[in-house]
Image 1 (tube, rainbow, N blue to C red):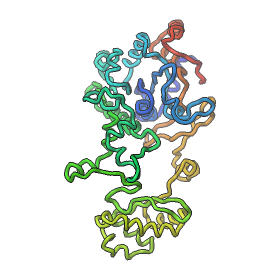
Image 2: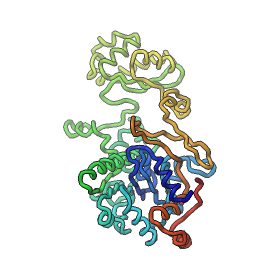
Image 3: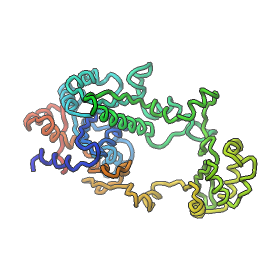
Image 4: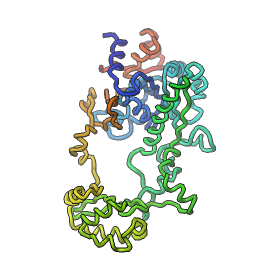
Length: 415
């Protein structure tokens, strides 16, 4: 089968509402690649333009048999073209790919694309329907725009980091690139909205997604509280302030269980399950407002009860009482959990070296046009030759000359 027929067959197999759309990913590390990965999960044909030395995301996380396990997931459903954007000829190849795309995703420092001749004005002059998703630390303008942006640093600027962790310790962090993921998700959401709008006007637009703004948007309840009351949100550990009880409690067998019973209807069921109906009459605990004022006392009462039961017993009791509660799952728990299995939340596409490699399946689930994981993340330059031949119609001699000049990097496909 010819290269062109192989590619056509693979892309026709794509499922999802974005099938038929073309995405060029110029981004690196997490936010840009995650944004494009989401689009690819729902059927878009994603071409990732990557340097010969590889995206930094390939060096993050664990490795096995000299392969990036993180890369297997975040680079899935993408064709990989290795093109040197530091060279004029490489930028010309990237420009031609972008001019044929519906969406371009980038997360360089603002102004980089313009210096390379890949700015929106240049690209949209040829492709007026182009949607350019620009992810940066602080946005495309403003006094901080030229600062180097990194997810966890922008998280600190957003205020989100200040309220994460225990009050008697320095601010903590979630052990994943959560702000990059939030911003990538916003970028993909905005790109799909722009596609909808383009159906009416025929015109594309620029999406300006800033890491600090994406994280700041999650500070929603604390913004009016400061403006109206002067209240500065602080770290609250496992609690959700002003929604009590909603915290982590110790169990008899040395585990912890998180219980959420802040609403009055759930609280009534909860104290009945505890065998403590009198807590409904205690003025400290009778209403949501009172419980928030006396949350230390409330948590003391609950902890005294949870310490008399194992985590298994507590989950059974609270589930039967329709009270939201769960132990804290680790990855071993997740892999053995029947609900994860029934919902097919872990999928394992084949990798040529690793064999089946596990990763989170596509979310959310669409009933009629679901997404899919069609292949695991591919190697640097694995699809360079095929992309240049099929998309830019370069002949083999030209491709070989570009490789000899180190403008591109090609390897043999394992397909």
